[in-house]
Image 1 (cartoon, rainbow, N blue to C red):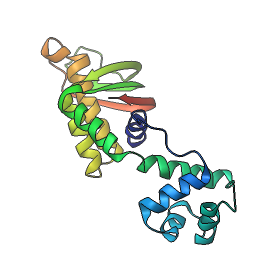
Image 2 (cartoon, one colour; image 1 turned 90 degrees about the vertical axis):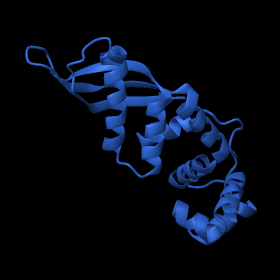
Image 3 (tube, rainbow, N blue to C red; image 1 turned 180 degrees about the horizontal axis):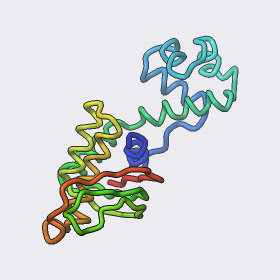
Length: 182
């Protein structure tokens, strides 16, 4: 869930983050305050960070380059991220696309066996707000799944109160993939 929110945030960038190693390291030093802090973040020495910053090393190892890119993208355009999340939580809502096993508790005589389904459902802003609040509060993946499951139950299965009112609980298990868009 955290990864899906992060991917959705990255889709809203208005400018591309720095692509060169020197540019990325410069951005991280500005964000974190020192070469030592950047070194701790990406798992190298402060001397290596300074070499990257000066341009003495043009390329980092593949694993380090990946960590640098992730660190830059995680900190890139925080105001744009906040604005898009605020818009989703107040007016836009979120669209969830997933392929997962859904199971639910239903009245006797109906099928409640969990089965794989591929769903794309637009959830109202209330669910987006709850999801972002839960993530900001440090909620676990399971807790955030529960929020999405409640939204699927209300919007997809119960059609906003028009059908399947006997469903009491829904779970999302065995997620193949999950993408968010807002």
